[in-house]
Length: 439
Ligand code: ASP
Image (cartoon, rainbow, N blue to C red):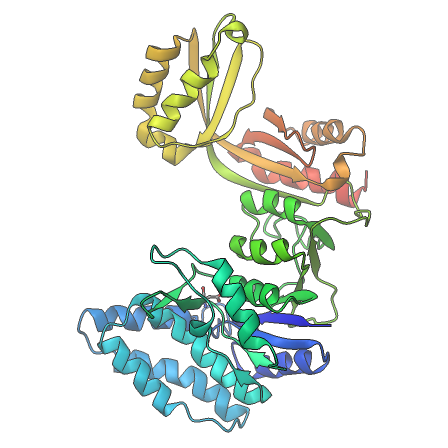
């Protein structure tokens, strides 16, 4: 059994966290490949090393002195090294990094040093081999990630390496400069390493015990999700639920490797398993609830719309021409509604409306704003009767007016549009009925 374990920034923010990480790794022989992030926040007002590096680099680019800021970064690493009594001196490394900042090695290079240096510290602490991802994670000329050669290189490089630390977040460009993923990108590196070594499991260690059924800022202490499929996760992530970088799914999903989100501070908690499919019956009819504010709806009416060939195309073309993508499009016989992001739409509103008038000749166009969308997601909904009914009766009881309903053909989710002021009340009511009352 081979596990790839990725530890996020808060899991490696201090010597105390490093100790927990080492305990976790040592407690399971199969945890052989370790992907660290840069040290994150130790307390809520703290600054992540990645942000400190970005800040320093900005100063360097402006030709300003950044000695003080750089010292603070060195201190983050040195305090961990000293406290854990690791036999490692990073002086040379720090000097190189500083010289490269002055030489303007690039923002990506600057940010990547957070993971690079943390990888050095963790490798020394664990006594594992250090493998620089610049050697094995590749980007194309246009800056996009190049998966095929990367997987081949990871597999080749780690063949015969029993245990290694491979820093997250970055790789290299064809011209050998450093390129980083977008923020939170160490999740992607973990996934790549897991796929490259054909791991049995990709464990992603963070500071929460997995995904929660809904946002804890709305419902107090919501239950965690034990098992979620990739498709369900995509629906929830799209609606704003975040724990894992979205691009981290692809490499492991393609290789059929499950992901387990785990909590470094509570290693005994089962966390959330993300899988392709499962025969496990979900505990509740729904897997999760997520939502977002900031939508507008363009409602269009035209008599006999249903029999007019090309009507929908003529309408949608106007959005496309103006570079506004639509999110949902519930329709009736003589009506169609187009749900868009309010701020994107606002900028192009008059051009789009004029275009619709000119090309599709509708009877009425009306715009509703300040709408929020709530996605109720669950593989269990397909086989249950009356899910939609229960949602709507819960919302009616909570005095929430439903403005829009859209059920995907997969029956995996139901999207509900409610006024922004009703958003929190609606999410709580749905949680209450499915999770607390277990209906
Ligand atoms: N350290 C980087 C960030 O803060 C990448 C990561 O942690 O995944 O975004």
